[in-house]
Length: 206
Image 1 (spheres, rainbow, N blue to C red):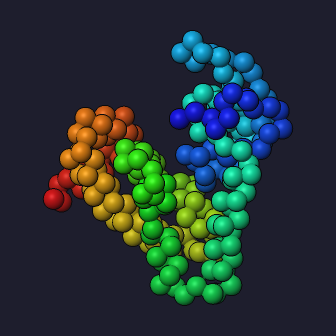
Image 2: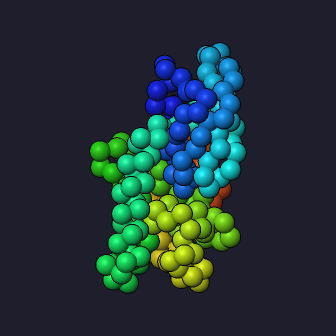
């Protein structure tokens, strides 16, 4: 993917989010260097993210978006999280929210191939250690999920999420394989090993 405003370029002090890694939170650009990718000029950015620390990213590759968009998304997530924290959502609904596959993987206005890629990218979460907390932050919008849930609760909810993700991956993967088998195979081949293992797992259940 490319940056949202590649023609304008990014500047020192810009606030951004990584579209593929929303759990990283808002990032502040602290350095901008000229770079080249596939013969085309771009920028190499040093960004300090709220939850991921300092990362060096290529503007031509990373799905960077202006902070205004990130703020809107985070406001909506924090509103939902605040409702849960205030007890305005019962436990069954909280479990449902945590087990839902994110909109990026389900949005019918996105192309089928894009949704499949987004689905397989969710297998980057392992359900252990800091990855579990990153997943919970993405699902709830809480900066510190342990302020609302115990680690045991999160592990239990993650198991439900993984079952929902497996079911969604099987459904959307089969749909894409029927309409565009070459694209489906290419996406799976480029996916990280946990996603490939998941596709083998769901295929074995058919």
